[in-house]
Length: 214
Ligand code: DGP
Ligand code: NA
Ligand code: NA
Image (cartoon, rainbow, N blue to C red):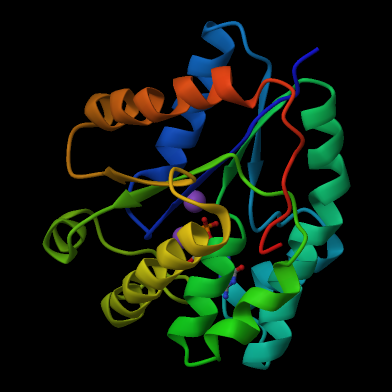
């Protein structure tokens, strides 16, 4: 049985990522693939509840401490993800380690430090990065009330995502990080995402799952 693929969607807030992950899972199912959505942070675990409190600003945490908690939240889910992949189930992740780097490095934490705790996590077969101009972002509905949901943070995060893209190419070669413009309609973005994913589904076959930053 071919293994499932690990497909990550990343993007700034208001890039339409949450809509697109749902549509991608539905599309995969319609094409005959078993697929499951995994949202990060996973706020349902004990660590996830600490992250949730931090994001809603009901708790304050040191920048390094919260960085490690986000990473720990991915590590506590990795065996479930690996089991799904081995069972032939494709995992669509709404955010992953790349958000971890971009959001923490945007605060001024050292980029290499930010990378390190996620070393060895399952390597996404492809990451789709939804891009949005600052102008379009500003035209979309108001940011939510959570920490990070403001123009200055999002601008800094965008710059860090550009560095993350370079790092992915340097470690894992071209083709693992695909930029998808989120400027168009929901249907246009969905079509572009599927255009990038369908080839990956054919390619992964029985290739082993790689390891991030290794
Ligand atoms: P979401 O539930 O997708 O809206 O994500 C919640 C917020 O947390 C969003 O602003 C992005 C941020 N975030 C996601 N993952 C990480 C991470 O690993 N580290 C940090 N510092 N922030 C993250
Ligand atoms: Na958000
Ligand atoms: Na989201």
